[in-house]
Image (cartoon, rainbow, N blue to C red; front, top):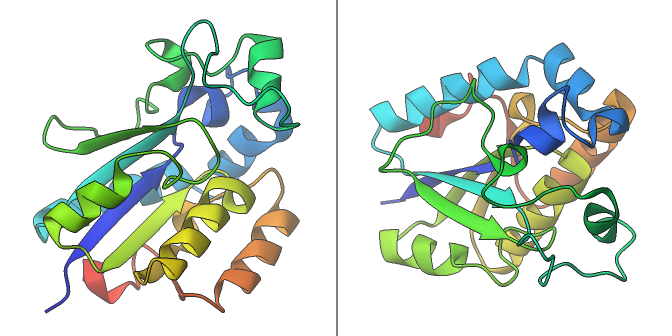
Length: 194
């Protein structure tokens, strides 16, 4: 029997809210256009009804940015702009997504949800072998986490309608590539949720 977990990746204010410091990268507009918040909320509701654990993963750094890789063109910008600080509105899960005390919370300091986090231990503890995932951005946390999950021998299911990138073209290109390492489904078509 398979055991499934739902990963909700970087659905934090700084990344997907129109007032986030990275709003200019296009993610909030794509999240809205693709109806990602409603689709993700629907997937979470279905997962809970089926007894599927929900794991929220967020990127963030201490106020002094001690974990921030300054040499990274992507994450190094967080310190420069005073962004992605933990224990702040910036790294809270967007208010339109229902988060509960029984959900797992994972904080990461790199792109992949697995790198230097407790995610692998949580998945082993709950006996998961199949990972449903959605998040922002498709070309960053979703792609990197999906590839790492594949290489850790998890079955990977990308919930395409629960993902967005800075542009529709980028999203579509990455989704096309991810079909090589997992199933691409939607929140309404994934058999694990229905």
